[in-house]
Image (cartoon, rainbow, N blue to C red):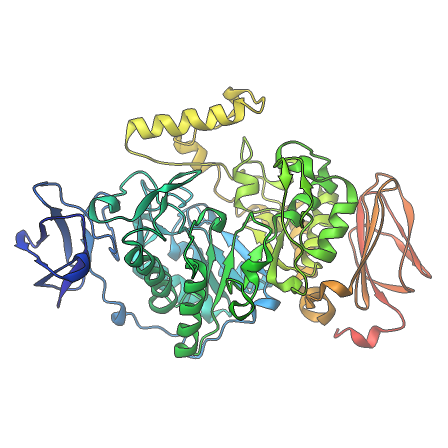
Length: 583
């Protein structure tokens, strides 16, 4: 049993409420308050500020068993018996990532139920699971990007113990765990931080509300709040890495940027624990400084999501040209991304109306995460359509081959591997009727502006919108899902068996294409990925005389060319250099 501290520089008086008793807290230097009131592990507590009788949860609450408005609960992290003492995460450069949402991954939507599906991920060949945000948010279900209790695993998912059991089970199967964290804003419901201190600033505004105060008065403790949160997930929950949401909305004019500070502290923890830890950023900046080492003037983040690759691949397969897709056309941009990571590396973006990006000179492809689909690309479509809703099986196979044989670290979104027919909609469960109405109306207005019939837009607050988004685990055993799943397994197996497919040297990637005839060939060492995106059969030149390793449709290899049926892909090995392939 120990006392407790809280940072509350905005308060004139702080009291702690626990066990039916209320005690005054002593004011310390720097805006901190302290109480020697003994609070045992698993005990509930809350704070009262000034003359307000409303009990507030701890800003660093480790557990919110009753939701965002309830009291906090102590957690004894030392009490959990881990079984992963010998665990070491695989190198990130060889990763195959699987992004999942705990609430929709299984019918039960809990950490414990997700454990029962780990065998599926192991047999698929996944090395890293990436969890969408799990810190406490409003309601029992949601995406998690409006979390407000950043230290507390969501109560409906199973709380702290459930998360620890899930991570421990992943490690026992050789699977690392990444966690998506949101440090650019907090959600509106249950957000009491501004009552305690200057956590937010009006100097900047994110698309989702006030930005975190990282460079103004009082920002030292705000930065400490976020860095300590990151270290907690990595240390106390044995998480192997963090995916940093939308870092382009993390505003900081300090000489040492928050991301640089975070990277340095994570590196120090890595040294202390001897465990391999990674940071992966979502960034709309196309700025190579994000993944440039600190010693070379960068932020020191290990990798970042590559939206340009996704947009170029999506456009090449579908021809879609609305919104940000209008910046991408044909196979030329896809070829450029495969060889240079960024398509927009300093030239004019019509969508943005300005020049965008910078060339990532000398940066390996394994510093970028590539994908055909993720939670945003599905959930931010009007009806939550997955790629399987607007691409045919052949296009899905081509897309999977280009992702899993790319020079980037590949990522799959839950169910993508078997072409899940269930949507992944945007869903919420806000108790506040005004907030619920605003979310519903805002969603409809957003897509009405794009020409959609508002009657077709699922209501985020309708429980059915959430329930329809759950995966159907009967599908992997049925066609065509079964065949697509086997295709993904074979591709992942090839990536693991052939070193050249894990080589991130972008300068060694060869690409040939014909936009008019709609074919593309990507050369990765002794392997070529030949794609026919046209509807009719055609002969496609190879960079060598090849032996077929894997084909989506029956075709043939003749000398230095392949005959590919319409909308198909073939992976071919150099007949003269098969000894370079570890099969």
